Length: 310
Image 1 (tube, rainbow, N blue to C red):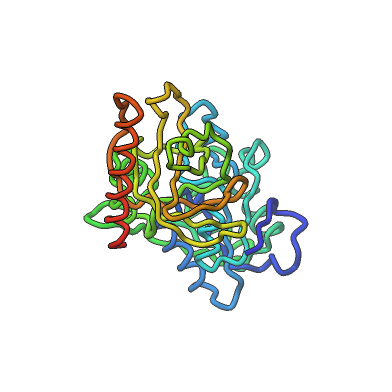
Image 2: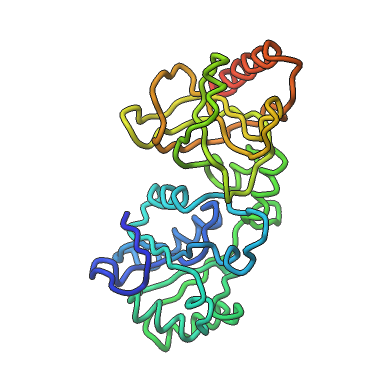
């Protein structure tokens, strides 16, 4: 998959695509339906996704609490798995925010990307002040020569799949329910960073990852599946992870600490994709290190039992 960071100066191979457009935070089943509709609309054209980086909500509400389900790296990895050939991560700032619906359609979709077709969800809005509706987009497409498909919202039990519903499920530790809406395990992806190395001292070495900027699932311990994406140890491993502030040691900046079962390599600087498979327990403070180690061993045993059935 090729990633493009602007709508101008594109190679010829990136123009004339059939694009799904939206924020695609989480790339859940509703998003996948839009992407599939884009492919069906123009099966002979290259499949692309148009999204925005940073998320427009980050631009308009800079002081809001972190809400993203995935960072740009995780989103790109997921879209590549779906067969997307071109990802347009358009830089969202004052320029894009200030374009009227007509100017956005003309400058970005028509002249810039040269789209053959664009597909959006039924609740899509665009342009300055979110003034453009799906009907606006269809009219502009007719005037400017690109096709438009409006994909219906999908869900279950009368409720649409949405990033908000998935955030709510994760915040309560309902990762299995989140998985049914996502169509895949919720994943935290990024580079392994140096931590305090306490896990190694306790006999349970961990790979530490930042969760800055992400919506936090319920803090606690999880059974996880870990894809090592780079380095000599590429592959999929089972493990147990602690997401939280490490109350045993008086620290309060959340991070993710992952122990890979039956692994002895060096992961510093490598990129991991950590799937939260099941919530085991909340964070806790223990009466000394022996109690902590005993609980870690119990967590690992529970995680192995759960993952044996995945």
